[in-house]
Length: 120
Image 1 (cartoon, helix red, strand yellow):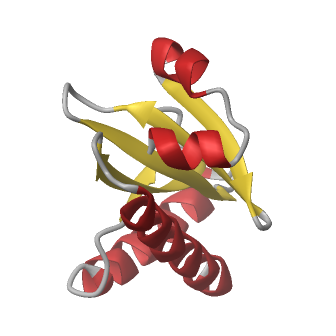
Image 2 (tube, one colour):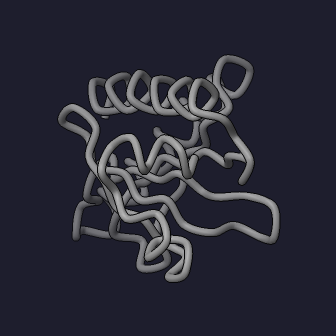
């Protein structure tokens, strides 16, 4: 991932020290954060959840059903932030992932983001 970041003009040293790197690919915004001692978590915001608790719970329930159905088709995971205000898509990636591997992970994420945004 370091090689990918450097190729794209991102400050990997600063990101590595901070444990966080934010960047955009095409029209999608990603955040890469340290995840344990051997990896990183690639994350993207999918949608804001409704303020109304009933609507919010219905949206989360529907998304959970779809996420369960997609488990066999994608390594990405649908999550809700700690404040229950945002749906996020996450993918764990190895710290030593090479450039083609990281680009494949980004492609998987962008494809899944498009799918999720279409159905939410």
